[in-house]
Image 1 (cartoon, rainbow, N blue to C red):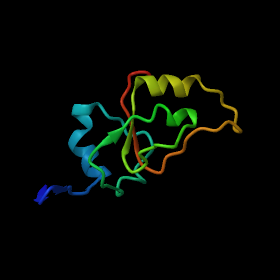
Image 2: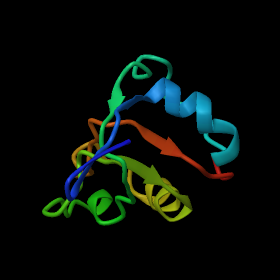
Image 3: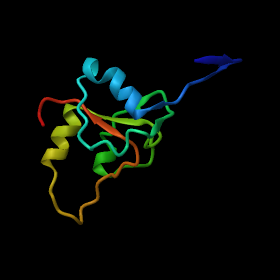
Image 4: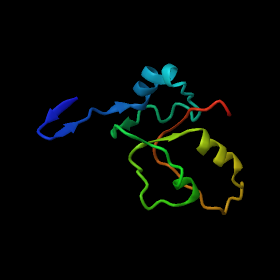
Amino acid sequence: MAVYGKFMQHESVTVERFYTDHAASLELNLIAGASGLKRFIREPTVNRPGLVLTGFTRYFAFKRVQAIGNAEAYFLKSVTKDPTSSHASFSHVIFIRTNYF
């Protein structure tokens, strides 16, 4: 990480590198397959998308990795499977850390 004046520039890392380096300690499971492993993570912070899952996307931090914890996982399991209902879709990788799946 390099410092330039007041701003810090963060290095990008691939999803594969992040997963390889941290899967064991964070108890991560790869559930979506390997097709996204070459994508880059450029934002150094994560977001818990609780409100976005209900459809409120006004302040959604879409550039961040979305961390789905137990609360979000339980919510997703409880919602209807109606294909016309509006739920958030994500263009970034989602890691799920839970013992409930």
